[in-house]
Image (tube, helix red, strand yellow):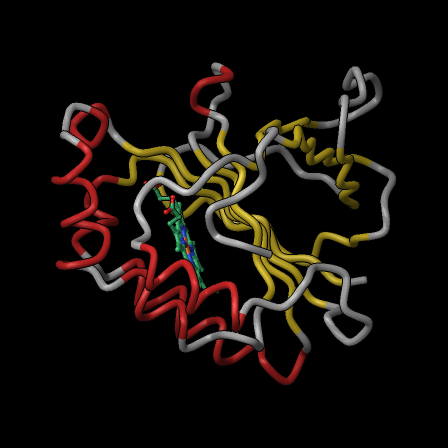
Length: 187
Ligand code: HEM
């Protein structure tokens, strides 16, 4: 995976309901409103399902990177594992919305908060290659969440992942998060 991202966007739908390879083990409202209870999760790449029979459907697109420098992009690409590894039987779907205050900032101000003040990329890199991840953008689709973040890891790496999530939530970047749900899964 390269951080500069694909030339065309890939639509992805996360469907919570009775079907799919992932079993929901926990669903927590971290900031704001949570999501209705669902037993299983299916991830659809490409033109999405119509949502019939689903408890909820969240949509996003895999798009280009907004904030990383070329050096960060190369470092991430060199250390980022692919999704779907055999041993990565745990996953987290963490939908995030940021506040109007965040979106009113200029690009350079957002970058400064994300990395220079919060070290998001630096902290995240420490979890590579244990954690595979993919970021999906929903804001321009009019979706309830600006971002659908997806992570896959082995049970042995679960504690390290929790440390990362806690560290990120304590950063200045998270002052701008006004809705966040944390859905944990196993397969
Ligand atoms: C596993 C290690 C992680 C790495 C290497 C990582 C890396 C990154 C990078 C490089 C970006 C910026 C992409 C761009 O330039 O547009 C990003 C964005 C983002 N990440 Fe992470 N991240 C990690 C973990 C997490 C976790 C655990 C969460 C949630 C708790 C998270 C939430 C987000 C969100 C919401 C964005 C979008 C921010 C925005 O565009 O305003 N990340 N991540």
